[in-house]
Length: 340
Image (tube, rainbow, N blue to C red; front, side):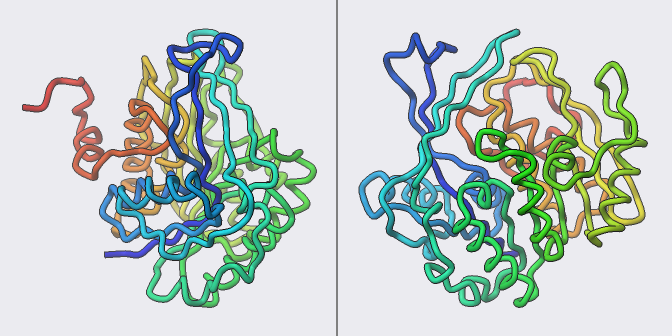
C-alpha cells in the first residue's frame, strides 16, 4: 500500500442552512475541511496510507479537527500543536443564478504562524511515496511559505514524488504576489494540477485561444501544457475543465499531459449539485491514487474526473467515495438507481 503525505491548513467550516444568505442565517452547520485535509481524507477512503501534516491549537477545537481526520483513518501522528486558533471559513451556498460565497476568518491561525522547526520532515517522509501540497499554504503567510519550501526540499531529498495543486485564492493574495512566490516551488514538483486561471495568475501561462462559448479549447490546453513541461520538466500537467451553467448545474471534465500524450476525459453533467467545495481536492486525490496504482495516463484522468463528479453529490468538504463507487461511475453507471 502506497503512503502519501499531505500538508496544509484544516479549517472549521460554518455553512448557512437551506441556501440562506449570510444576512438571513441564525444558525450554521459545522464541519471540518481544507484543501490538503480533503485530499488526505479522499486518499484514506481509497485505501491509501494517508498522512496529514499541519499545526493546530492545543484546545478542544483543534483536537476536534484532528479527531475528524482520525475517524476517517488519516494518520495524524505528525500534527504539531500550538498557536492560538484554528482558521474558520463561512460558506453561503448559492443556487441557480446566485453564486456561492466564502468569507475567511483565518488570519493568525496556528499553521500560518508555524516554523520549519515545528516539523521533522526527514522523519515524516520515511517510507513515504508521495508528498502533496497546494498554493493555498504559501498564501497564508511568509512563515507558512517557508515551511512549505522546507517540506518540498525534504520530499525530493527523500525520493518522493511531489504534486502541487496551484489553487489560487484571490481572497488570500493577489496574482502578482502569487507569481513572486510560487515559481520557487516548481523545480521540486513532478505533478502539477490547476485550472487555466491558476496557471495564468500564479505562473504566467496563458491559453493561446479560448472558445467563445466557454467550452474548453483542448488544442490550446495541450499547447500550454507543453510549454509548462518545457520550462519546469513536470512529469504530468493536469487540469479540471468546468463549465458553470448555474450555481447548481455544471459540466465537469479534465485533461492531462504526460510529456508525450494528451488526453481529455469524458464530461459529466452535474445537476443538481449538492456541494461544489472539495471537488478539486477529490480530483487531486484521484490523480494521486491512479498514478500510484499504475494506471495508464488516459485512465488517470478518467478516474480523477469520476471521483470529483461524485464529490459534487456529497455534502461537506471531503469526498467519501470508494474505489468501487468511482469505478462504477466510470463504467457508465450514473443513473442513480438504488443499489440492492
